[in-house]
Length: 244
Picture 1: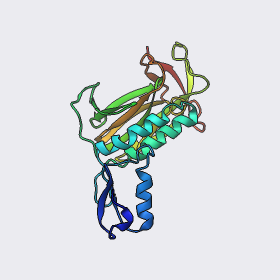
Picture 2 (picture 1 turned 90 degrees about the vertical axis):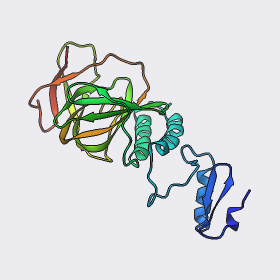
Picture 3 (picture 1 turned 135 degrees about the horizontal axis):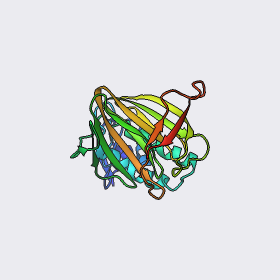
Picture 4 (picture 1 turned 180 degrees about the vertical axis):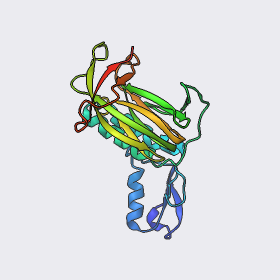
């Protein structure tokens, strides 16, 4: 094994199998050794220099998969927030992800899947200008949505009170997020916060990822219908019902 402290400043060497260090100064060397000491998502076969190196989808998986496995077990409200924010912090480093084979998923929208996620799946979607993905709840999996290209307007909602996905009666929802999703931006769906969302693509269309993690039993698909005008604009409340 090579002692990193004996390296000339600026030179690199492999100190352990798969662990490469560059000596810049003492603190940098110590930081790199800690990064390879077993912290989830920190052990890299190569060190990335954000000034020069592209952060690829493969780099994302190397860091996100072990981190997700460590955090996914805490399904509380705050546990999900911690999980989603941690995955999002890695996802935003990807400038682009190559689209997989795509299929039609409604008028003006296509969807495919990038392989390799665990415990999450990575859906890749593309929308033509002005196309829509209707408002729908996520009853079983939380989501990090990442913008890659173009822009889409996203609205998130929550049911006022406890949601009943089987009711045929009307109910009230609150719009919690009104956002333009642009490249590098994220929209987070926690199963207990912001758990319904819908998309409208901008004039250039849109493309992005849905990093979805299943943490409950799968539930039937639902679509939300909301009134054209708010019930209370100041409180952002709307009358709504499930589409039949």
